[in-house]
Length: 331
Image (cartoon, rainbow, N blue to C red; front, side):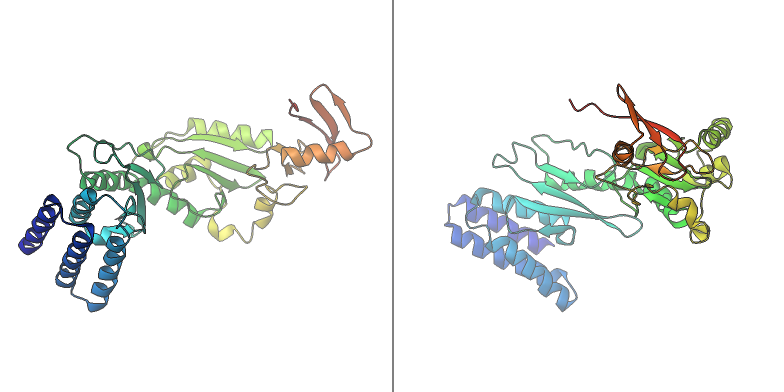
């Protein structure tokens, strides 16, 4: 490692002496190859890393020579295995692996005024990444902050993944590390909408039951009276609060009709242009759900439908029970 530091000092001296850019890039390329070959035990790993670094170095002949060496030194401190290089000197990704083995990325953009101006960072996390930066800050500090943000989400991710493994999730259809909103399928044409706070992963979430009024009122009453236990996982609390109302994974195939009843009864899909079914037939044996736009279009096509101000009156496409819907103003 001492030899590597000596090499870095030599690179800095080359820049300070005002050597031409070609000599600077050759020196950096030679240095990176020496570091790669000596720090990696596997020859295949060495070839891959050296090639990656060579791409990183060779594409920057048009960049500011005064920044190439300092940024390379900062990335070396982070560790090249934790960096994904691009073909632009000012863009790269920092990689952090969580306890579950999932890799999370922080996309970094360096402005021309760096380091006076902080790097712009974009992350795929369910919480805002509020990076702290000062005149003395380095990219290694950004990486530490990013890893801390990833670590703070691990309990939240573990609880959400448990939900996906054990109950039927309607939306998002698959696990999304950025999502804080879940909609779970329940029996009797009811669904449960969860609004989660990753920073308070095991606190009582904001919930909304959607479905026939009688079932919703009963579930809400039971949920309100339940004493939430923050030492238990999110799913364990939901199972205790909702009893057997949640559709567990083992029942998904058997109870397919419960989930199907939550699809739109007109277009037979769950999401339509980002919207989920929000209207429901009040006839309990029917309880079909519909997208607002689908139901409005259906009712407008009926010869006996009527409109009073912003309310459209007609009948359910399934059971023909009376239905009404508030339509949006065209303005």
